Amino acid sequence: MKSLEELNLIDDFLMNAVAQDREVGEPCLKRILSVLLEREIDQVEITPQRLIKGWRPEIKGVRLDVEVRELVSDANGDKIVASIFDVEPHNQDDLAFPKFARYRQARIDGNYMQRGDRTYEKLPDLYIISITGFDVFGEDQMVYTFHNQCKEVPRLVYKDGVNLIFFNTEGTKGGSQAIRNMLKYIRNSREISAVDEDTRAIDGFVQQVKTDPILRESYMTIGDVIDREKRYERRDTRIDDILDLLADLGEIPDGLRSQLEGIRDEGVLKHLHKVAAHAESIEDFNLHMPIDL
Image 1 (cartoon, rainbow, N blue to C red):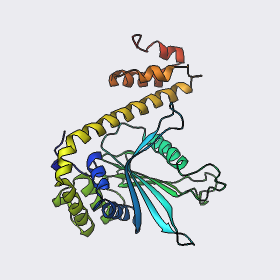
Image 2 (cartoon, rainbow, N blue to C red):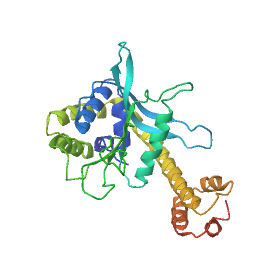
Image 3 (cartoon, helix red, strand yellow):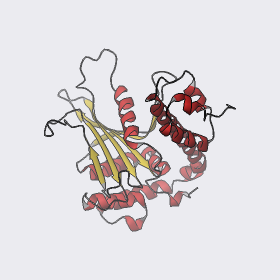
Image 4 (cartoon, rainbow, N blue to C red):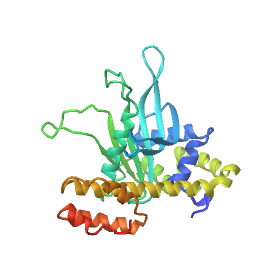
């Protein structure tokens, strides 16, 4: 496990520690988002480590690393949520990222509609922002932005307000110099990487958080909790992927999800994922299931 000084903003713990800090959280996240999205982010509310539960016990929930809500004034002068930014740093390429983003979009949107709402216009714009220490798509781009598009009429703008953005801290193509500098600092959060006004400001926030004595005392305990939650999330994602593959072969047997959730060995789940990808039938897959569950 890294020391607190060795952590970077690409690490979950430090990003969440910054977001939770009442003094630096809002100005730091506003500055990061303003640079990466290339527009001014003004007033925000931040909720770190937010859990959105499933509709039923058997439905998977999601944990948002950092949720930033952008506030604007409506015609009556009341503050409303204009945009939601789900900011997710990732150091490990162990998720099916497009489907991972798709599921997060569904669960976040469902949390902003209430029973009795008669229009969907109130839904805020949504930005699923993944900041990765690797290249998800293999094109060496610093930024990958995805929007829904009409196949038959590509120029037709589909105004659903959904923005799926992947920032690749290892990329060398595209993006502005300001984005390049910010991604470099997020990957390596040291004074040497603070090369412009924005990254120097972020470094000041980060160093303030890293020297907090209360944070230093709690680092090991909180870090263990986050690591454990991440392992559970990776297991759940792998199980979902297995069931998605098997659904193409026929009806999923009752209790199969519970059986898979009972498997604690990550290696066994990884093997079953490969089996599901090549199985010709669900019966074929079942032959590979452990018998001592």
